Length: 221
Image (cartoon, rainbow, N blue to C red; front, side, top):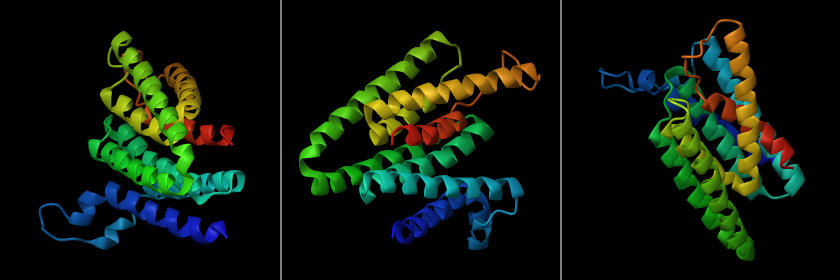
């Protein structure tokens, strides 16, 4: 039954991710035309990335629904993992996190708040309190990191974790931070040892947060 909901939803979200990443080609910038055929990327790496994002989305929905038995929780975290896909991609390519994706995440979370308020009723205060603690924790740690390390943590990373905290709450934010930073640490060592990066180079955080958040959802079951 959950497949009937998850596959169309994740497919639509994957198409939206692809559309955003390929927006310049779709709009054919400078020509004033729209070419919807460009939604499907010709680049093999981009195609593989979208396939992985789709698999991540389906997996998250399946895990959350099978454990909690409710579509709200499954849909909420599926949306989050799909939102983190283009954030991770763009941060990897340009070391930037677009504000439009952060704003989209915040607006979407408020939509889920309304749905949760209608369906869950008395649990809303617990959800809000957990989310607020998560935002304070995640943003606080990364803000501290930006003060301690020069160019180590950007404001885009802080805003990204504000969105993650709103979706995952206090405990999810803690675990996501720990796993993401651990994955980043291991990857950084490998890149330094192999000579692909030096100590002066900056490493984008969002790709590791994408992986770390996905892993976190397993542990949060």
